[in-house]
Length: 119
Image 1: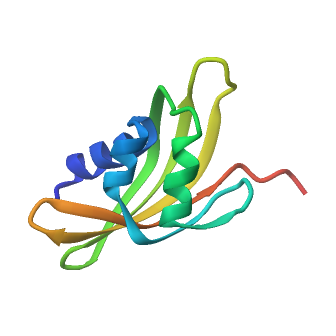
Image 2: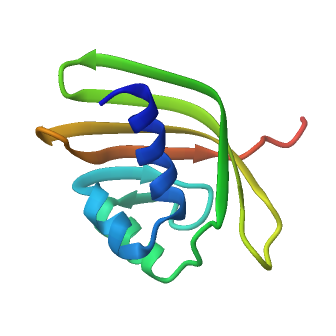
C-alpha cells in the first residue's frame, strides 16, 4: 500500500461509520486510548465505536510511515479531529496494520496520546 493509501485508510477509521470500522479492525488488535477502559481488544474497540459519534473531519501532521517487513506498516502522526457539538480533539497516534492478502489490510495496533499537561 503506497503512502497516500495508508493515510486514506487511516482517515477512514476516524470518519467512517461503525460498519466500516468493524471491517478494518483485526480481532487480534490491541488499542490504548485516553479514556476508560484505556486498554482494549479489537472487539471492545469495535463495540465502543458503535456507540460513539464519529468525527466529521480529521487532519494529520507530523506523519511518519515505516515498513519493518513485507505486509506490515506502522504509522505515527498528530491528529486534529472535530465533530459538530464537540470541542476539537488532538492526539499523537500510532497505528500498525498487517496485510492479510492482496489489498486487504487490518489494524492490529492503535494508540492515542493527548497533549500532556505541563509539569
